[in-house]
Length: 213
Image (cartoon, rainbow, N blue to C red; front, side, top):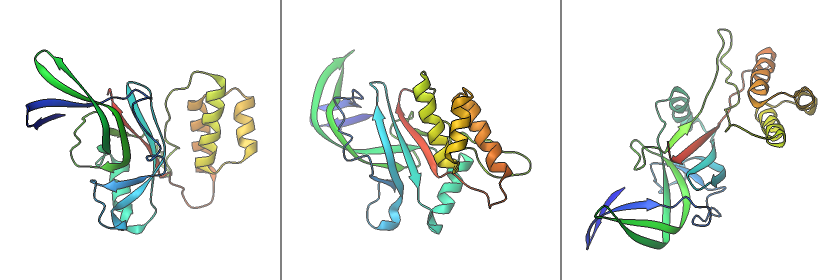
């Protein structure tokens, strides 16, 4: 992001090196409406987990089921609201020069909240969510997670899908014993939800990303 101080213009960056980011305050923190913190009604949800890998920061957020948050959730589902921004404090900067431009990089910083915003400072910061619908049901499948590479990671993702969808251990065992991958398990979960006679279930957890798009 371009900023200005007493020395003139500069480019501000946030390092996504795991050693640079203190996530201790972010996990369990609030998801806010455009960084507002004047009242509890400004809280749209909470951060369930967060991570950085050097190139990208991701977080799993859960939306509140309060009636006043429902319109926001529906706009997220529809893809109308998809931009996010992270609030942060900086403990240490590193200054460099790139092609004649000053660059200040936060090499020690702490994010205490994530906000839904109309226009993000980082165009790569967005909500990532994928749902599938049939002609006879409005129940979304559990949100897609990042591609997994090992059997242990796939099994962990299957358990996560089951937890979100409310499926029992026997369903989990069947998927794992059958060698299902995460995509197959998501489709199986969708089919199981579609067959239920109970009212439709909605998932209120989505992933947000910042960094390389």
